[in-house]
Image (cartoon, rainbow, N blue to C red):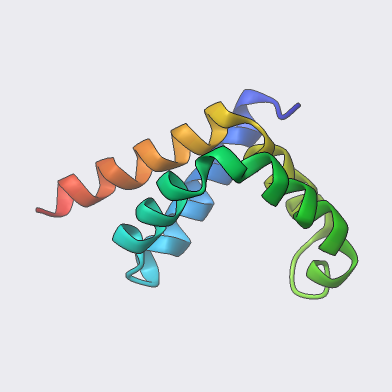
Length: 89
């Protein structure tokens, strides 16, 4: 389980990357659509961890998997993305 401070740090970093890529609306759509499968997706992240660590720190990959496993974490990321999108309009 992620500590609250690390969870917020990860959500902020992910939201910023998504915003910089200009993919806020597609990301929200993807997360909302596949929310019921989030646990399965997290398991795939765990499985792919050796390959994902080539471009990311190992702790970041583990934390990302834990964030996705937690339904509240996915909801918090969606809420952050929606808030950032409404601020721009």
